[in-house]
Image (cartoon, rainbow, N blue to C red; front, side):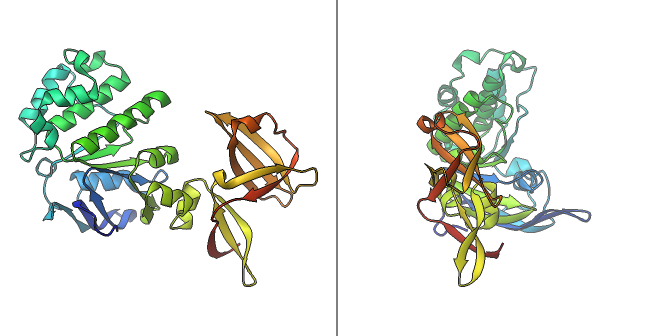
Length: 331
């Protein structure tokens, strides 16, 4: 839990079981105003279950949920000021975008967010949907549909946005564009954004704060930089794709160490112990996988200028720059 956080929403010891299946185990966290908290983790880790509990769509087996200090654990969804946005649009298909926004504003939450106070026109302008107001949802592209859905959520007066991978089905350029829009909206209107994803890049790019779930349990949290370069747990290091190898010594015991691919420098050497097994160019940088003669693999991110100089099967030495995280776990 973060110290000094401005508490908009707080979860305390949330657990959820379905028969003998544990979907969430003792989850505790604070979510701040004007920030996006990413709930990251592999499929089946409890991310969507957590959102359903926060939204009031499911009741927790144990634990409590507070909004502005008020216990809302047993309150219905329409009294919480919370809206859930997923890949499916929240718009009524028989109404135009304009009518959907008017309906959301008319029958929305009693406690309005600052977006509604400023007026629907501001929401429409910020999301760039002025030219589609008189269209029906079936006439919109995927990106337009998600912008219009986000506008409807804002028009409802919701102060907490729960986002269940809403951009996952869109192509990469559009996803990146909508991430920028989302950050702007959350910051400008002082909303609390909570988004789940299993995409490491999305978590690091979009989040102000990241919480890792795995096997229904809280496995660490921190800023994107902390989670990547100084992960709080070995689970976090694994999830964010850090190199984890044996070799460092504490006393006489071999331990595991982790370091980011960006920290690896490749040095060509005919007698090197590392052999290039794979390389690929990705948007201005290269990903290289090197295999040690003992079978240990290391991933490196290198400048694209070095990409054409690397050859599969060639031998190299590597140097790891910066801090290396040591884990007192036997290999």
